[in-house]
Length: 149
View 1: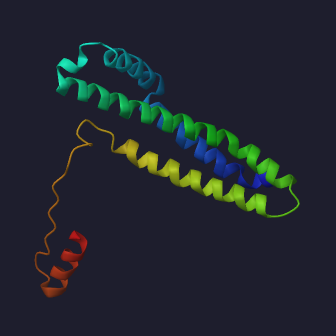
View 2: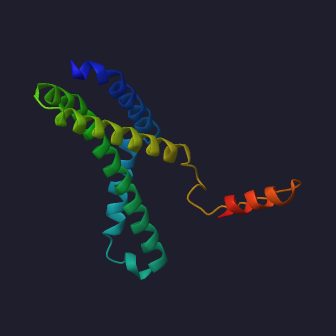
View 3: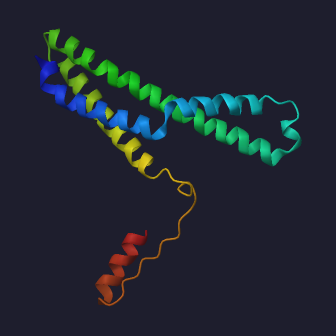
């Protein structure tokens, strides 16, 4: 019964994760990881330290992305089981734990969704932001200063 109450939320999380996995292209990431591991294993890679740093940095980012996606996938798949087990427990603490996990998953998936939206060629670079109060007097200038902090 508890699983039915939370089923729609779990389905929404699942759908969002599926779309993120499609955008990030998990099979392509795994293939990139294999290629980068082979490159990192080349004995004379460190003769060119700049190239070596780029390869190892990229490998680290790709592996972190793969681990994040597979970890979230496992947690999403465990949610229905968690609620099913919580429903069979006599006290409410198991349901509270399941709800906390559901809320944590919502936050994690939402954060990853935003990161995925900001996953373009130049998105890992710094940005220059200018905030001006224009006309508006002292209050507008104070507000612009608060935003800048």
